[in-house]
Image (tube, rainbow over all chains, first blue to last red; front, side):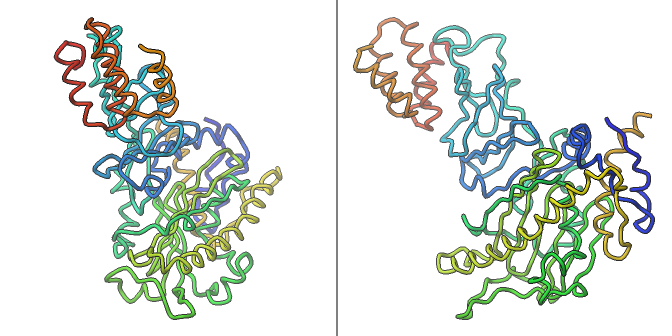
Length: 385
Length: 71
């Protein structure tokens, strides 16, 4: 693993420096973080809305690993390595509906949607579909540990992370009032941005409010900087909240229904949290969204955004115009962020940039994330000593 | 296999048309007197019935299992 001096990153925010340039511009460091930060923890892969019906399957390349997310007949989502156990052929190449099994296109070894190997045609010779040396029980698809929360399909590729429920407990507790079914807004509530930056810069920008007056002047007209607060849970998540969220109301007085049973706090509050490493969530009284950051390369990230509503009435056809408006507003906000995350990527080519100096008042959530990354990278080294 | 069946088979493979594939393979298997030859085509029918989620899959499985050719 390439080594940088991370001791200054781990200091209190008032004294700390940010992650060194190598963490954004080095292929070796990207590879190291792939293992220690993304594979060893619960990373966002995709969303359940990509495979909404039983039998749906979606191939996803995750940092070079071919995976496939499958929803079985009972609606259970699983993630498998998208590789046949026979000759290593890629199994699913296009998103679509499987009727019953995952059949390898090469020799037709066929797997149940729950991963068991069901058929091995001609494996014992023509017309003989068994062989003493082919134990189907040992040759099911390799399942990747996964968990679905807020419709995000999280995966722990290495299998070494703590149980998901434990991993996410602090945020789940904070957002306990949002533990209700959510309803995807449909095609125009799902959009992507292909951004020329390291994935961490998208996290860092998302979890602080300091930039709002400059980068999102339209948002600032009603949601001023002083209406925001920092959210920091060291070792788990960080982000920001606002005290002045105003739900959208159409000219004819329509609005989205709220989650049931919310306390008064959420009448005007909304929160935006980075679930480390790569999932960004936002909650409001009437809708939530997720951004799954797909790290493609050291300097390229695809942001997958999905918007969900609190009540099924919000996804009815007569609310389509309001959903489109909400999607357009978020699209505009997230698009405004691209110039700064790409600018920070470009700025890190400056060899004399030293990781930067945090504002102790405003950059706490960013520092919280940097410290978490630094811990993930230094713990294996300490363990090896 | 008749030439017309072969052409239909190639078209059905191209379209991944499981019901047609099951029907052609099974009919051909049932036209053969030799168990080894029939088992090959019954296997083909079985795999496509599995992929297609067709109820025939169970019957085809039973046929193969009864002859020691499937688990």
